[in-house]
Image (cartoon, rainbow, N blue to C red):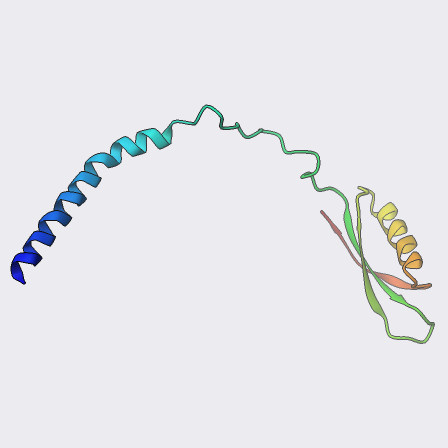
Length: 107
């Protein structure tokens, strides 16, 4: 049993040593970019640029009803235009009574 253990330890040490010697070669290979690798652009794509506002409105379907929050994502850079777009979208969604603006956050 001890002979098998000694043989096992020898083979494991040999494999570890071989791995450690081969490791710098692998690191050099992986450090070089492959010829087909694409370079990342310095500028973000147009779809990744986030502009506009998130408008939260208090809306109701009836005059004497509890307020519910309606959230609208506007691409407009103007707060007033974003609020007007949100109110129009809320009316189209079936909320005829617009209570007040809860919050406007810039993206």
